[in-house]
Amino acid sequence: MSSNPDLRAWIAQLPKAELHVHLEGTLEPELSFALAARNGVALGHDTPEALIAAYDFHDLPSFLAIYYRAMDVLVSEQDFHELAFAYLSKARSQNILYCEMLFDPQAHTGRGVAFHTVISGIRRAQVQAAAELGVESQLIMCFLRELSAASAMETLLASLPYKAWIVGVGLDSDEKNNPPIKFAAVFAQARVEGYRLTMHCDVNQQNTLMHIGQCLEVIGVDRIDHGVNALEDAALCTEIARRGIGLTICPVSNRFVVQNLTGEEIRRMLALGMKATINSDDPAYFRAYLNENLNALHEDAGFTAAEITTLVRNGFDVAWLDETRRGHYLALLGASLS
Image (cartoon, rainbow, N blue to C red; front, top):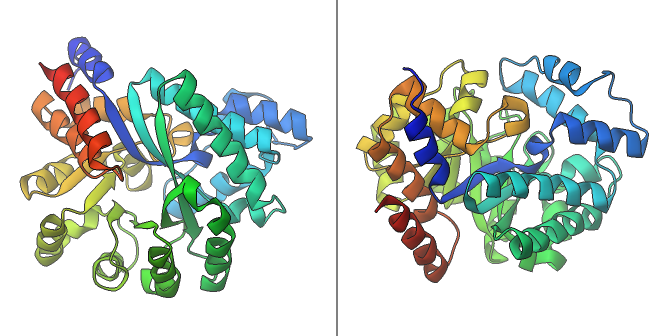
């Protein structure tokens, strides 16, 4: 489908929420080079363009190998501040007024970077962005599922002094042989501590239907990140819709990982009353932020303005906001549609 400049402009002006964006996945090559120079880290490439050209991934494991190696440039509190503020500035430029940012502390503490360093830099950027840009944000702390449950519990306990800065916890990274049930005790304790719960069930991963089932019946998640394969099981779809569980879909990311934008799958979710939302995942690597994901659905999958409106509204509906804030954003969305 050809590009429609009018609809692109319309998408750009919509007030939006983003619920599935990995902060480490917003590390643009230019910032990566600046931080590498500051911290004496060798990138192995001469230019940002050469670094982008080396983004050679076609599935989840090949992506993760590049993703974690790139994090070596993040060392100081200032580095994390610049990373987070750069994303929040980009978000504001796309009229994202509210976002829930995922971060992976174990990927940094495992390199010797203190938890305090990571979260303090991010928090300072959040406060600055709220004051200067008008972007509201909350943090979701993710556990790396290929690491042990004991490591996840240690990270959970390390987060407790900063609990006021973290709205929820998630589970991401390599899903193979790392089912949700492995972390059941960790997530049960996170619930006791007042955190909201989400878990990744990425597209076409091993035992993904079992994983989605465990998310619902064992963990009791509030949301599922990705979750497209739920469509293969009518009972799962019915239960997700009944509970009003949000699904944070990342179309351009899907096109890299499974060579499919999953547009038809997103349509089916909407038809079944499932709360699908659109997000950018790791936009610096997939070269597409939220507006580009919505544009791709329109231009490559034929999504109408009405369908896009539903997806955007769903983002606010399933956000971890109090009802006053949710109502505020939904009113702004409504005004943009009138």
